[in-house]
Length: 113
Image (cartoon, one colour):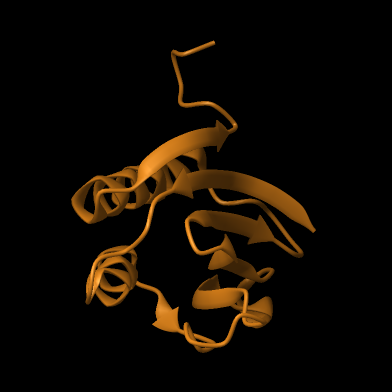
């Protein structure tokens, strides 16, 4: 499995904020926010195994105010860099709209090296 993009964020979602974040990024709800043990709270399959290798975007919760959106490629060719940057833009826009602070991006955005 290859990680193509990871965006770490800090902050708490206001009421309805998590739902709106997932909608803006195109994630299907997963898990229960009320359950402390549920860490995976959103998923989007960008490419299935049959389409040339599974690519998924997932939202993870590590604490009440610690979040990670992770793009992974399990098999096959990775997503093109243009598509990764489109997804990064959607994630950053959704985070800003929700009032979350982006604390890390891997790899860093182009031109910030």
